[in-house]
Length: 461
Image (cartoon, rainbow, N blue to C red; front, side, top):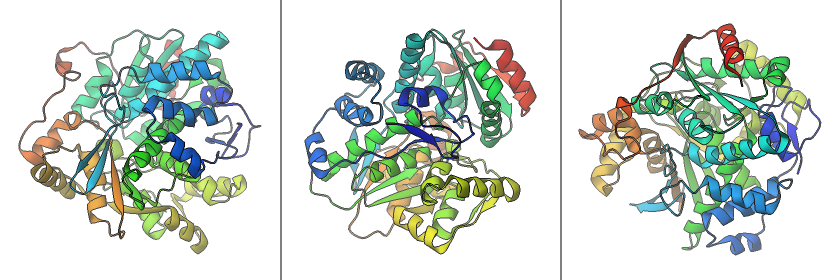
């Protein structure tokens, strides 16, 4: 299996090199040259597999340069810290299936990928006798999950940018109370998009990237998307076992990474009927899917802050496929987007979009109403991001469909929103208790690329 850039500027590389490269050296995102196809017979043989074994079966299709025994050990180690033996268990509430993705060490879906990616980095750095400086941006959950994935690991320093005061209190504390010497938290006066733009610019400085061996943990790293593909198969196999045929995944998303993993699963042959893309008021992706309006607006702060994003990094991967793998057309569209803040689509392209996705935007009022009503009706407490996906599923009109809603975080991570919706604080799990009493370490910085570059250079390993 070889990997190429969406922008067409690199020779094909191996899976190991793709993990280490993160963002392609031409500024694009890495993708496999082709997607392995999974037959109905193979799907049937996977039914009932434990999560770790299913992960091995799927990931090994893409990571054929890692010995099977090593890959199995990496996967088993990555999920040993999860609180539920099923890793991503399914619960049924009302007429919806909730796929719980928050049983890892930081109580967010990012753990599913970042525990594995941290172990992959450590494995490859030891194999190559190298060091790495990870740089990433987060709107909330990626940062803590990435930090927990590499804290204390040899040969790795990690620099995580988050928008100062624009994550939940718990999300910020989960990052800033990790004081391991290899961890550097940076709170930026600005939005997530400001953080992400600075990180992308840093990776685009190829001499700097190579001099300091920069590594990526954001979903620009293909290994993160790949790890998330697994739970689409896992959930589909569970639900379809009861005879359900038209299965729809409702995915709350801001950066398009989680739902792109579902798209990859569908490209591999998983018979997903539809991917329902759910956004909050920052609805550039919903506007694109419903009416072809991919244009930048001002970021709105909401009760679902991890989705407060306008420019979705992973959308480039989908665009590449939408443009029939034509890198020159993609490059032209991205140049136009940089100049005008919008991309236009043909009728044929929109026909393809509508065959891949449907979408809905759920505002804060609806989100809080959904948390309260779902708790009253089912006894189940949703976090505000999951509530966006649940409400989108409830309001959807796809006939005879069975909905799997991705639960992306534990509700205790967003206590203010939960209390606003229900009048009560969520029960605090042991992982979060007392965080506000711990010592913290954070660098507060303006949205200044040169300041970031200097800070990374001064503290790189």
